[in-house]
Image (cartoon, rainbow, N blue to C red; front, side, top):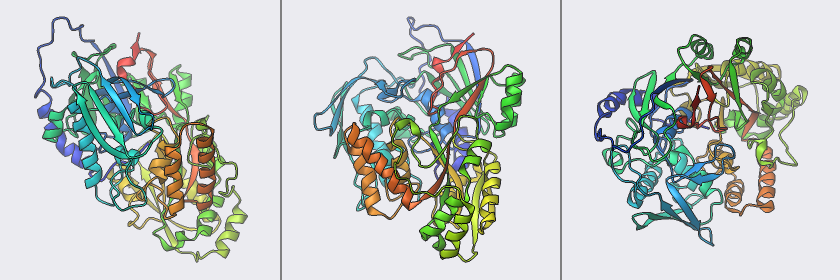
Length: 535
């Protein structure tokens, strides 16, 4: 899950006026007579941060993905229970024997919200746009899903793109061609970032302020504190019960809880540690997602002293990950010894990251190149993330543990909405340590290994060419025991490098009011609200 990119929230908020202006443009207001009646129920969900934009192909933001999952749809959807690929805008597909191409057959009669028909040319327009974005991105800009999934946009690097082209065969048939196999391709295409936008909106360049898709909800309006959607009366699938959906921004967990208890919102995401007991006393239903993210202490190896692996290992030995997981995260959170969650059964069998041992940390420091230098430790304020519900508290505990073994830590708090992710993912900045994490967005180990270590510009990018090659080789291997073994070996190898210190694989929770009969909970957090059932 998931860094926001450099354009930032301000650019989105400045453009929301454009979104409001466009809300009625291009929409066909005359609904066919045989169209089912539009649902009338309203629903309000509070989440922890404003989206920095509404185009998920540009923004690695949980909030952007949640909103766009209602508006845009991909060729492939994710089964709510298993995460396995299921028909989406493509009713079927055929994988070539050499695993280097997939032929998709599109559904008939699907139209975008602006009335444009979905056809193979529209699919190609989206892939062409994503490829152009990946190739034009600045070298220091955070990578988004197309570049990460296809390892695209790195000419002359150690990794070459596995994306070749998108070919239109006929109106309903489109072929996605690869340069080499990528085993989780179909599962990766379930990410909201691969949702199809209207070619007209792509041409107009308005997708980030006013998304136009084929989904069950249409964009309505946006401000600094909310995005409002309305049911798409022309939707090809099941509309469900919700006619008006509002995603409201409430950064403080306590305020989100109060808003639920007073009836201002119907549900809120990322229940804070202090809210579980009050909610239980009032009989409020709390739903838990399985651990599908990882929190970690980032180590910026552009800071000279952190190039010394002994210093990085000392950081790991100084941190009591067990205490952090038990006291700073909801019950059910797992201690992280590696970056891939346990559900994939690829845990390393010879992990070398040090266990908590303050004396060992002191010994490592004494024998290392560290001489008491000040280490700036960036941490976020005024936010909750799926991988980090209480960042200020986690920082306080980590800082105390590091100080006790001899590190000179200098706190640098940054409000999440003031570009925190940009700051800590830019190696040229002066942070030595940082507090961040990653949420998986599709059901495969490469959902973690790819973004974190799969390219030279990956989140935990390492200059070890062999490690980079191993990550990409594992992604291409056919499913089976050999691939599982490759990921186990890879986890062992990463633990020896210590590119960052994994802390926890947290659970996250959603609280809902008594109206909710069935909340469409998913481990990725990309719930689809046309599947919501209300009393």
